[in-house]
Length: 296
Image 1 (cartoon, rainbow, N blue to C red):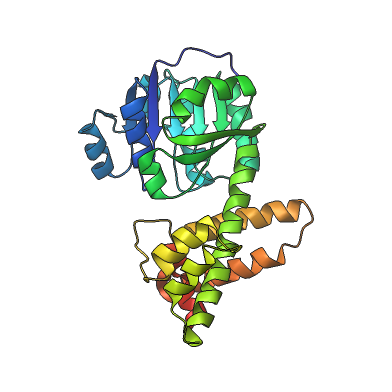
Image 2: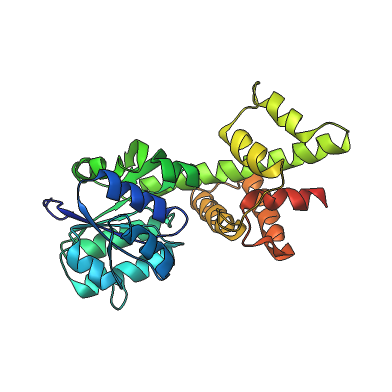
């Protein structure tokens, strides 16, 4: 890890469903100038109206920011932004710390940390959990992997976006915790979809079922949010966490399972359901849409 340096300016690359509100919280709370970029102009323009220094490229962000946060669809984009043509390493610039807040393969985190360190750039993985509303409210749970001193240096800025910042271990550990969190979320979602469908066919109102469950031992965040707010009313917007993102994450969890010699049969079943949901035409809809496949 590169020696710690002052953090006077911040960057944010990837202003999507989660990244845009996360960046907005940095703008409002960090006390630092924030430089941001995204392939789509609309979120950049919205944040520019709130004080963002709008940039047209990764290179512009790297030239201006000491620390850059990434919120991108997958590890492929993270690697491209860090190491690809016109990326952070190629540009040089001012940046000395990169924080990946995407959900990326843990092995890639170690690779990026080593390659960035060779250019004097420190690296942390800090994926997030909870909903897009939590991203707006600045109440995310953030799981961080990397050297303790570097984590503490970034903690004040992470605290602009989340209420729980947990140092999980070395580089990649944050991703392990996040990936397994998501695995359990999706598996719980499958159980809820099955319970909801069974209840309705038995003549019991689905909303009543989940409200009663929320008062008992089967209560969970997934039940109260993905269940009651999406599955029961049948609301699966395309500007939320889509089915194909869920497939990516559960595949990462199954890769971890295979590395540890764990069969993870339940997770395999949930992956199959998610993949069937995507094939049925729901790839871009909010992932609790899996209930439609259980209903068929």
